[in-house]
Length: 200
Length: 200
Image 1 (cartoon, each protein chain N blue to C red):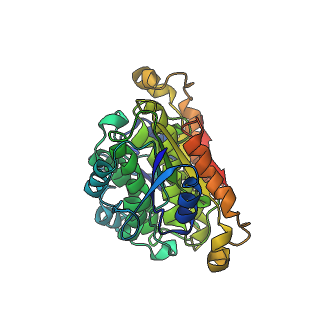
Image 2 (cartoon, rainbow over the protein chains, first blue to last red):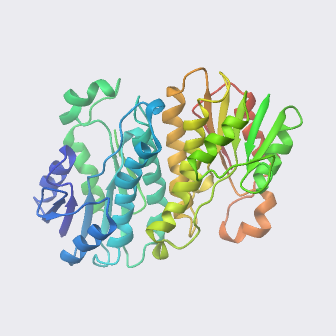
Image 3 (tube, chains in turn yellow, cyan):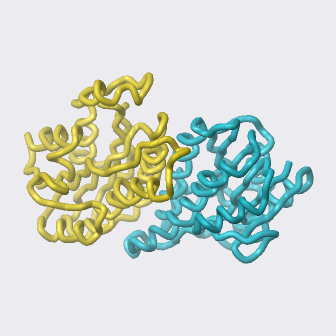
């Protein structure tokens, strides 16, 4: 398969997923400043240009998207829009725009996270964005034409980030990266659609 | 209690909830063009002015918020922002701004809907917004100070709307309005917080 991995050359999860998928597939990575091609997922026109430059995709995987990490009491409206414009609408736009460029039967695999279900202090923006992505995938997967599939992986705190981020996730058991990467492989190589693949 | 019900003089659910709560409480209704006081929940400054004009609230109930109803294949980015700006960020801003105006121990009760869990054709915008609200409430309730509580009611298709809307909700069993109103009463008069109160 020819697979586009957004964030595949930057984030902890993205790099692992791209590495794993590249064992069996042709992987093209995209990122704002790194990767094989450049894209700003906050910008719909940038997404359109990216898809126009990589024809015949069998799968699109997104491991990218920012959210604002802060106490809710200090959040401005603009702070809350950080996650809405990036991790939520960035990924929604990947599907909305990408569906007209990819091959029939192609799949989209987005990334949410454990915070939709088990939030921690300062995670309100990430939580709401992740929850939106879960319901978005359930609602949109059955509407897609041409056999396109759409799933979202919700990773927990990964082992590779546990030392750096673990204090912010009290009592969360770190998940082996290999298990998280399996979630993406299940979506890309599997046959199901509309699923929230919880890996935690 | 002194209770502000946004949408309490307009929508099918809002009117029923306001009527039900007014049997035991002082209810003030707010709406864009109807109600005791006016508010545009899409506008943070309008929300701030509303709260400044009604001091000493014991509870805030929101039964208001628009979403775009259309096939996903026809949705523009602006279409998807209809629900984000209104039903999602309108209600988020009610909590974000209102928390600094209401009485200690006051409650916020928002409205999502069955489409977060059981979407139907053309409901992608409503689904994503409802899902975001569920995770928002879970994440923010434990961060609120001064004993403030925060819940969200997720009503199914209500009996009063079944004739008008039922065809869009195939196989959904209409819920008696009295049962939906009970969900709001449970949040306002109960003691729990951070709950998604599913009534379907």
